[in-house]
Length: 339
Image 1 (spheres, one colour):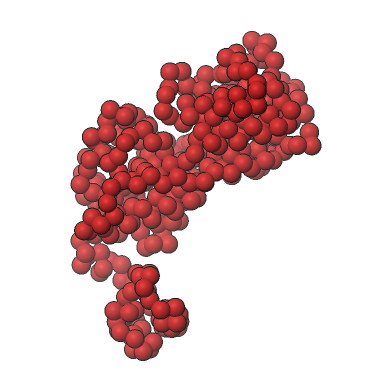
Image 2 (image 1 turned 60 degrees about the vertical axis):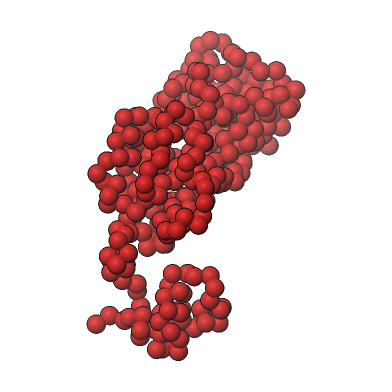
């Protein structure tokens, strides 16, 4: 027979209810009591019977994570962070990728797999602001990414505009005045590309540097090949530039490669800053300066918000919440102050 709550309670000299409160991290437990129970749990080797608890509560202990594309390093690293955050809270994560296609995202929200899940973390790309009614589902749902929709769900987002301002301002503070931006999307108004381009423009205006449309390179894709192609386009058009703000790190990594092939020294001739703080950027040569959007904290807060909604059986939390993760600039060799 395994160790039970009753065994822990007897050893710690407390009630079974007190042990349950400690196991479920109920906040109103006296510190000395909590410590005594935790010591008993560790000594006896007690582990919660999650399966039995889920059976009693009608829950599965599984949450979903839906992202556009795991081949994007950002979403792969986000998924890893979500898995870790969920595991700490005794949840399993079922990961789905939608390809960023509207029909696939709609199918996911109403498909049969929903019944297997206690809730879903959802990063939509194909849905637009006109699709807000599709998010009115009868299960816990938390959105990740840009705030395209006004409710009806909790939304965990990153500070795209502010992060882009910081990236561009860093380049300007290095004395660069011909800052090209790569990865912009034509006619986009509310997505990551539009918001980061807005931050770029704000930083230029704040420094008294005129916006030059020739320095904007449009690319629908945000992969390394797109970053390399953007640099080749700038060079072929004979556009003078002394810095690159890439709208994500994959574009920046492609740009570094293309600049190297073209014989343009980084950061001596061209400084480069990306956005996302991918692990790979630390090992590029030169290492990539970037903006960390708070991905780990996004994962933590998103999982936490979803579990709060799962446990909120009486609706006491109230209406939709907007949760913003803090960003930070990560200066490295590609945009070093000593170059």
